[in-house]
Image (cartoon, rainbow, N blue to C red; front, side, top):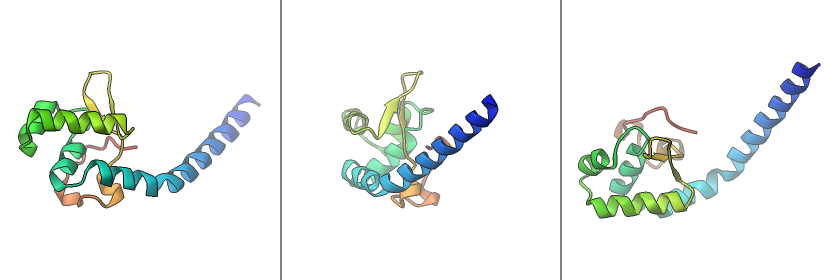
Length: 113
């Protein structure tokens, strides 16, 4: 009996999640576009996947340390990024899913929501 209730609850939660994803796509894309106005900031955001350090991303994107930290802080405060247990910045969205970068331009890590 408990498994049946758990299965129904899981099914309902998956349905709710799918509706929220669909409803939030537009606002999330607008937030990403506002926070990441140029290709360099978008590539930096995409690379901040929780595996790379700020220095690795900074060097790869040719950004100043201050500019990258400011970008990461802005994205975190906007709810677009979080800090993982290893104290590394981790993006919450894959820009490929929002058509903000091409798949060939991204070091896709599989760490998407």
